[in-house]
Length: 137
Image (cartoon, rainbow, N blue to C red; front, side, top):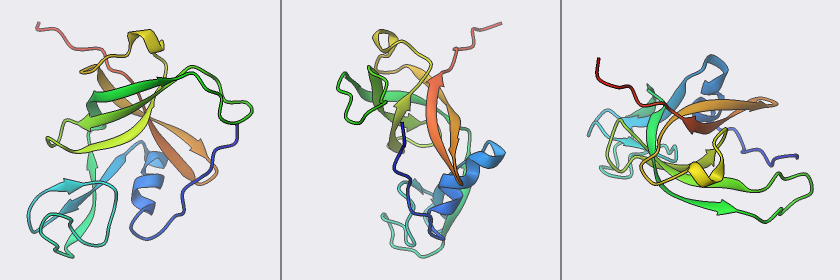
């Protein structure tokens, strides 16, 4: 299936191309110390222009999700999971992505996930797969 790719701008390129080195970059405000997404030239909380990309762990949890059974375009494999993932770095730091490598019936709210990247041309799409929880030793 051919995906529609995002436009690359100075603000969005670190997010869409960080996967080339295995890094998930999220905008961070130096003035109020908050992460935010989507990338923007000013902080949506304090309006400071002192913002820029910062690497994060790429770990999070499924905040909400839906399982789509409709093949909206030819070649789209169904079913697939569209999820809102909340990153561990900050409460409320969420974005929309797909959960991959997990049967849709096993996806649930609170599922621990970690970022993986799918490269298409000069864009690395951040997708998420299950992260096995580490037990206490």
